[in-house]
Image 1 (cartoon, rainbow, N blue to C red):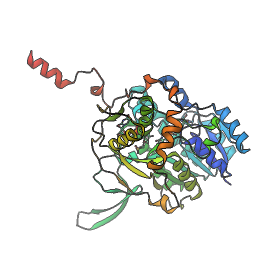
Image 2 (image 1 turned 30 degrees about the horizontal axis):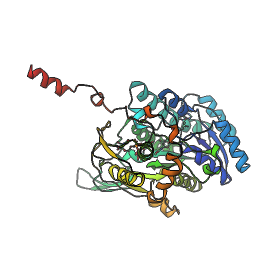
Image 3 (image 1 turned 60 degrees about the horizontal axis):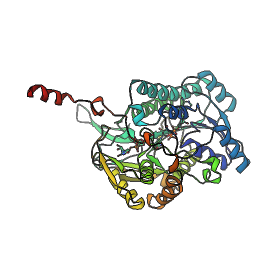
Image 4 (image 1 turned 180 degrees about the vertical axis):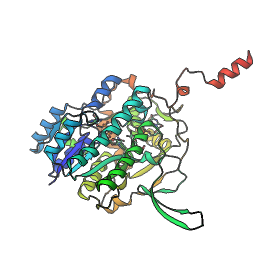
Length: 407
Ligand code: NAD
Ligand code: USQ
């Protein structure tokens, strides 16, 4: 049994992870400032599933399992003394860090959201590391990073787990071997913060000999896990709005409401995916297998399948009898890319992936159709654009020049 602190334990990945680790017998403390719920209120958005308040969730878990999960409402980016006191008093063996602003479109919305995402994510991660160093503690830190740090301009070269072994030619023709962090190529301000997190981890692993596991996770789909299914009050969140809804959950919700599936651009974007049940299993495996204290961050790719967006749309359209619409892409991203990813470590540790083919029907009928009466139709459109030129109604400079020339 370990003392496990879960930062961001009220969120989509954090809540089912807290339940899973508690079910395994660990003593779990959630730290969350509930900012995700406040952002929903600001956006006029809401989870499709009726998630309960933290107090109700914890009481339900006690009823169902007899186990207690502790909760502290702390902003880890701002409340340094409160966070430090909590870590000092609870002495965690493991800290799982989910507590960041995680939506790429939200991070591109405007000045305020860009600043908030950088301030929140970078300060939060650095506060955690600096507090542990200051207290002289030695917990294993498990961080949720993203596949997006590698970028999506791939041509089929298999993405390794975090590091790239390269040979560099010196002036005199001598060859030098280097093992470097895979060069980052973030596609949004959010993904950029995850790239910056990597450097913070690299420094503290080297300087303070911290044990750090950074999980480069793909897009998480699905809703329920073995534990959240046990009681309706434990249900996990399902985001579908234009900022926080990820692509597959959006397609499932759109199919259920009779809306065409909104494929951005050609739909040639290939992305990595993982089911939420496998997310919680991977984190349990990571918690059980801390890295050696060798001054190096252990990086694992946490994904199980890759799919092209237009193929996903076709799959959902066939299962749920929906139409597909190819819409202007609000993002700046490669129209087509290949993606091959190594996920050898988790497979070697025994992960048995839930495939899309197995889980899709369950989601379609069990979640999207069941709760579609709760949908807020006005939040479905993607309104955040990567550049001002992409905003609807904005006249592009080229168009102005052409008009001037015509006059
Ligand atoms: P989420 O937004 O549902 O959960 C994040 C939680 O962290 C929220 O409950 C929020 O209130 C909390 N939080 C944010 N800032 C905080 C702060 N300063 N102090 C305390 N709590 C704070 O996100 P999620 O989908 O559960 O993602 C969790 C982590 O996994 C994120 O770091 C994200 O980058 C990563 N990730 C998610 C996905 C995905 O598809 N959902 C994929 C890859 C990686
Ligand atoms: N897309 C559509 N139609 C939509 C919504 C999205 O075609 O209606 C496309 C996007 O343009 C993009 C792809 O689907 O090409 C994926 O978008 P997404 O919103 O599902 O995922 P993304 O923005 O990459 O972010 C999500 C999580 C983030 C996590 C990341 C993992 O929100 O926290 O880090 O997935 S990864 O993509 O591997 O970097």
